[in-house]
Length: 275
Image (cartoon, rainbow, N blue to C red):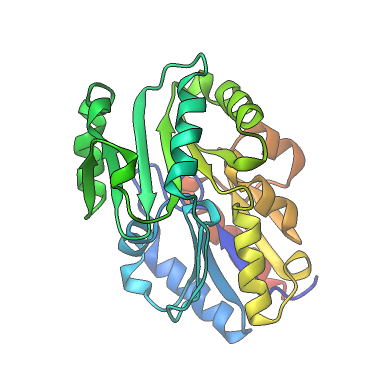
């Protein structure tokens, strides 16, 4: 078995339990083993930097980061290697296209920039329940009347749909937007619209180039949802979570257990034992 240089994992439904926890003592042991063989641990998530850093504050400086489904790439020592955003006029045009599609959102759009998160006031009906959750999750939420009030590139637009509609919406939105954007899902009805070249695999490639390794020969990756598809396809050793999307489980080996039972960490134990 080829020695691994990179380990990348999704968070929700993969590394984190359903109550958003992970076994910190076990993770610490895994990090020590990875460091001993000069390997890197990458958190690759649809979440933004702020949310990820909250979960991993005890491990600051010990993991690399691919955030916002690949829009942000950072090294463990804090160097930003890539920021990929959409300009506000582009997003305004895209939102008109999305609004014209025959789908009713469950939650209004959330616009994520590098320095803040924005919500439209006129979507208050859609965001009434969601807004309180967003305010708890993000430190910097700004209510706006128009997208023109945003003065930074938009890394990600997130819209919520009923889960049974999600894949149909993604197909329709991607067809309507074409090469202008990439449409994906983090699961649970959450749909992300990002720049066209943004996905977790491309973010990991940036880190691999920076560290002088080849991802398709030395990457172990774990995921449960469709926004992990490109990352798993890139990996030398891809693993789908037992609780993951059926399309991934049909294509890739399953991790040793699910997200609620240390599936990622147990699988890494086994892999590292064989090194």
